[in-house]
Image (cartoon, rainbow, N blue to C red):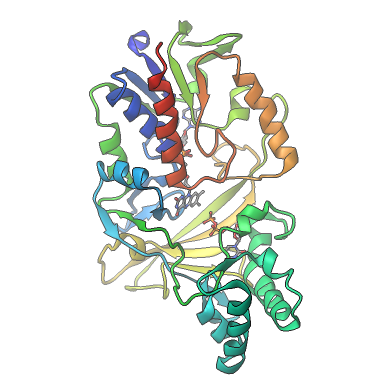
Length: 388
Ligand code: FAD
Ligand code: UDP
């Protein structure tokens, strides 16, 4: 009987699963989770493929955070495998660390010139500092400006065109700022104090998160088939639902895309299993000047799975999201026009009663996993303090 629930959560990714757990455990609420896919864990879902290699079906996920609360919270549901992600760019056959750093500088320009550039860069920006490519390109020193052009051309321009079908100047500057030039020899992709992989995988972490007597999960259910939205509230299965509703899907879909579709990029993952122990030199190799794919990830580096005779990789190819059956919206295309369209949809939700938008899709933002966990915890802090 659906009406025996206090709260409804739509989506069993990080946003939905953490919110459900908090409402159930801290708030003592009976929570129904509806998930459209036939599995939990959202885009973090992992599973063994046909060759027995553990893969991430919706793209490689590496956990990293500087938020102690998030790390401690998730540590209740998983142990961790220490893993520091390292990425190289394949630049005309030469592999150099990304983010572009002092080692990359030497590989690109040779020891002597690199030494001179390093001194100049450190004098201007400071050792161990991070500088975005767009800022570096503003530098007026001719040698630094030539270096910035090199990095722009060989690391950012073609990769960004493949990923977004737009140049680095056209996309939201926060996006390229995720991968700044790093005046360091630290060749890790992230510098967060806590990083790693769930020891038994993400799906196991989610199983533990959702394993609570107050939580019921129904898989393979598109919530839109069960919900009716009307002025002032929602109905579940045709009966007014008076409790909290947390929605973590794409907000335009809730309203039949009545103002037009929110633009997203989608990805095609080409999985390949090869009869070798290792396929490539690092967990991820970015193809920044060649090939139709942006990057190739070899999952065994991430998971630590030991298999001497086979390995599975995924090539990522980006496309415009059309909303066609089976396509997944992965990246919001953040710009003023799209944000304004999003705001129109958000306004429609504001008169649905206790209805909350939470998550990377529902908030139309470029959030990492840790940011979503933090947002779910903080929304539940607010909801549970509020007397109903
Ligand atoms: P999701 O995981 O998308 O979950 C939303 C869920 O809602 C889905 O399961 C969906 O099926 C369900 N749903 C939607 N609509 C409905 C409906 N109508 N009815 C029922 N269910 C519905 N972050 C990192 O921190 N590190 C990484 O390395 C990293 N790598 C990434 C790589 C890729 C390719 C992508 C796309 C993202 C990556 N992220 C990474 C980001 C990470 O995936 C997100 O931060 C996180 O998954 C967001 O969780 P969520 O719950 O908001 O969304
Ligand atoms: N980027 C790039 N070259 C790279 C790596 C990143 O141009 O080698 C740019 C690109 O625009 C990309 C953005 O930086 O979309 C963010 O990269 P990140 O690796 O954080 O993307 P994600 O893992 O979220 O796909």
